[in-house]
Image (cartoon, rainbow, N blue to C red; front, top):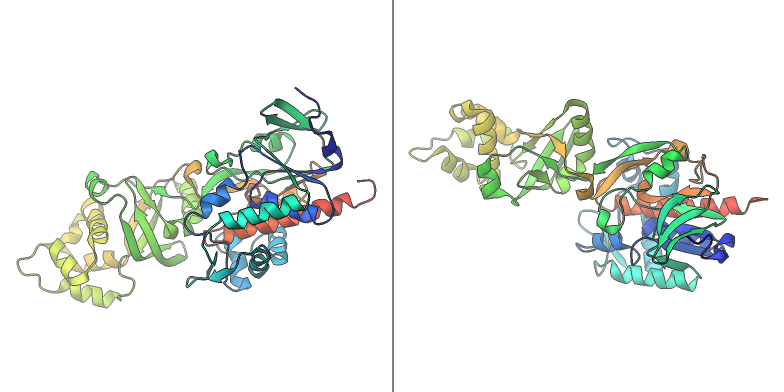
Length: 420
């Protein structure tokens, strides 16, 4: 083991993690004249960021601030003051202006989501890394953080073996625990716990859930989308799309309710939400159509004809009737009610590594206003390793950028103090 592989880092700042939060922290520090070294265990920067851009990079959201900030609170409540301050200092428009300065123009889609005009992540990341290198930021890839040595130095696993570096300050931006193959594995959790940092358990967020479907539904409808349905659960109600999987449900509508569903399962062992399969039709219309004389047609054919449910919705309705309320086959009023409020019971969230993001991590009570660890002065935290969560729709990336910027500025302010 080498004691100090990069002696110049003793006068610099180390950023651990080359995702959006870490890169934004590096930019904030370099912009204030600090020498910055970025370390990451992956072969290249921004692996998860690039993956997020495969379906069209959703950078942020254009909704009004008062609504925007509630997306980070527990169940649509106000978010923690430190996170709100970071978001307020770098809101959606500031993020769009920042991207424009890199030569990447953005637009607001019909849903309010904000995307680069070419919908791609790679051009933005290339321009950003080029600018950072021009500011003197140095990158050390395949350098995986292993915690602290007894003397406080950073331990790093590198291609040349384990090495130690001792920077003036450190920003940790290591991500949560989803998508381990892209570097977010939560390995940092026990090291911070051992350092006396207050932590919350890492849990899946924006995730799918298990449902005990029949073999028939699994065989015939796994992968089928459910478009234009309304999901309701414990005060949450939203119109959107979801997908039936072989083992349960996933998709944007499920992700939006995932924190509530996950927490309910933790309390009770299961959670039951309801689906309105025809949200554009009122209950009276559905009841009339279901009660219409069907003649010699089967009940299934009758429902398909009168309601135009489509195969996946019809199969899901029949699943609920046959497995849980078989008497509804002979009770048309109840059958109509199920079309408008079909119960679906989920029993477990999918594993955290399958989730789009994770909740839990470093508690904000463990940090000062500059996002520095109270238990470890000179060490700052940013991004998804902090204890916040938000739905998809640009909110995740916005908070990573904003907290990275806040941690970088916090580190710069701390270094400017006498004796630092």
